[in-house]
Image (cartoon, rainbow, N blue to C red; front, side, top):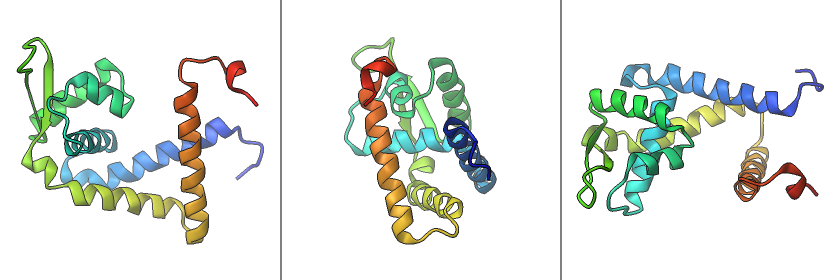
Length: 156
């Protein structure tokens, strides 16, 4: 790989490679990598004990826009992975919950995520992989801190 490739492009290419691998491995489940990610986020939120999860909660957790999430939810509901219903407190609010079909995939979801990560890290030592995860976690923390602020306010 050329060392002059912009870092943003590198992240983009990694993201696409990750999703492409997920898509290939999820064909038999009738899921895409994006749908899989939304289901994983929903199950994580449910496991935290959230009473009623709205579409908005899922959008925020998955970092997906409203129109995109609407389509993902429609497809997942049609496939039997989640249910939509009006909220108990506010009937105008669309609440989302996973089905047993989705929850039965919980262990496979974690294993698949790790499997694709290991595939991308071929040739790296365990220590290098742990360092990479640490660096990514730090970058994600920085990105969360920087949300809504200009670059100049956050540069060192």
